Image 1: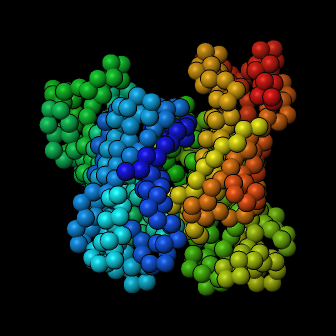
Image 2 (image 1 turned 30 degrees about the vertical axis):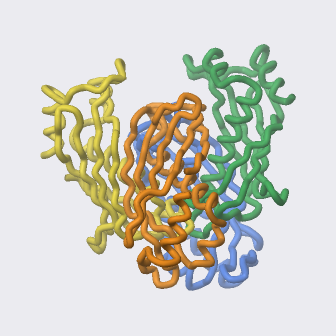
Length: 133
Length: 133
Length: 133
Length: 133
């Protein structure tokens, strides 16, 4: 599991003074890039000629967050099937350990050239299993 | 059901040249504001002293979308319980009728002063039922 | 001059309940894509192997804008030199003709392959001059 | 001068694989909040009943930035007149000390209740002068 920190600034908020729904997905994405990098260089994705393609996001918004608050986004590898895999993400208030949101992100692996979904077997499965460590 | 149109511009795209995951949530939100306005003036929300608070979004990303494409976001009222209600949204390529994404958005009704969730009964239930027409 | 319309939704606003500074640049960019398309198909940019690269934006924010307001972004071609060219953009409240913001956007023309700036002469200058009509 | 660090992620990029123009303004805003906080608690703004209102941004885009790059945004106080004040901001590639962009941001001070611009004299001028240290 990786822990990615993000601060809430004015442009993250919407008319209610709370972080907008869409902005949470940006925090989650930042944390996933950070999660990938913690396990392998981003350039490795290019070498393998693959991309992680998100096919579903299921996100619960549990409490509002306002200006200046420090968020911690916890990211961990979830279930891996031969077709797709899941990443589990939790957003908490860093200083109070209160949960703000949680999400399950399902992705497939795309071959950059053929633009086709790759089965998660062999080398690809080994790679994703390393993300569990 | 309302149909909201949106065009894809450069700032919507990410490094893959496709609309970024988070941006879809902005299109969905725009379409929901449009959906509300099609049924009542936005000022009515202020008069009632309520806000729609999204508690869950479950979104499937079905095909990538690139620069210049015209999207149609279809929004309709879903299941209404006494605690929460759902809006169903589909994003299609406007000119080709191909589905790009679909989402179920669950929301509760918040009292702006007390910041407490209101039960969806009486006048509030009547109001939401009108969104089904 | 082209006139591009955009509606202000909740995710455009920031903690003050007004459209955030950065969001204006998205409205301006949308209007510029629209401006380009009004004069030539976007695919023409690919055929010519060029991109418009923005090198400076000078924007005045004149009055705040809130939820639900309809904006009109007026875009017109400005001064064209051999190195760079300018686009002038005005954002007004569509129904009240009040000016919200105005910007001068300076851009150069980039060769997509060499990634080098092209002098604005010959065919490229003719192309930009057509944007004045 | 404060130095604020930001990492470039996929959602910051646009169809050219480079940070989008509008996103730079988000980095600049984050750095300005950070700049304010380095000199006084954000809650002090509420106590004084004031807001910093940006009236002009003049930004030069000097070189493209891509995925994974670490940016440093340097923020310092510029010229202070009785009507408005300026903040100077530079974005550099953190590890290579190459300049990516620079901006001059002009702001006025707004009284939150009257929504009127305050002259920058007395206590307000003293406050801004402290930002120079």
